[in-house]
Amino acid sequence: MAGVRVESRIPQFRMSTKQAADLMLAKMRNDAFVLSKAKVPVKEGDLSASGKQERRKMLSHRVSYGETLKDPYAPYQERGSRKDGSHKVKRYTTAGTGKDFLKDAANNVISKSTQYAKQAFARVK
Image 1 (cartoon, rainbow, N blue to C red):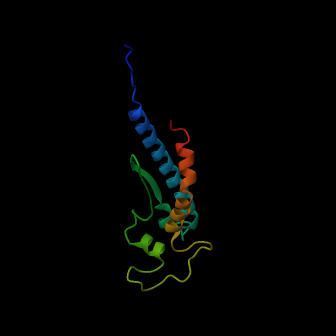
Image 2 (cartoon, rainbow, N blue to C red):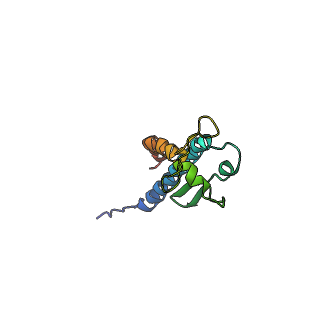
Image 3 (cartoon, rainbow, N blue to C red):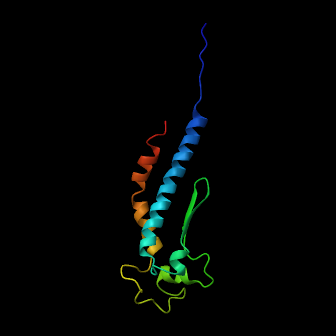
């Protein structure tokens, strides 16, 4: 009687899927950083220079502003007001910039997440 040999490729599939997901998140992170960089309220200076994107570990990506600043300037500019809601920013110094520069960039990228997924997972077999 002939034997049947089954070869499992689940570990390779799992690894290639994980790598594709990491690549997708890296592309999304990069695009969010580029979009947010264009809308940062101060084109030159501490806030704009403090922007960074990083890959902490597999499947963990991040875009941030203001981590190196001593005062809480970045969250203030992102919200457009103080934490307690007082003192709202009425005019930003540079035209075309404003509050929610990071949030709007993230929402824009997230709305296109299926396109990123199709590109990243097209090669997974």
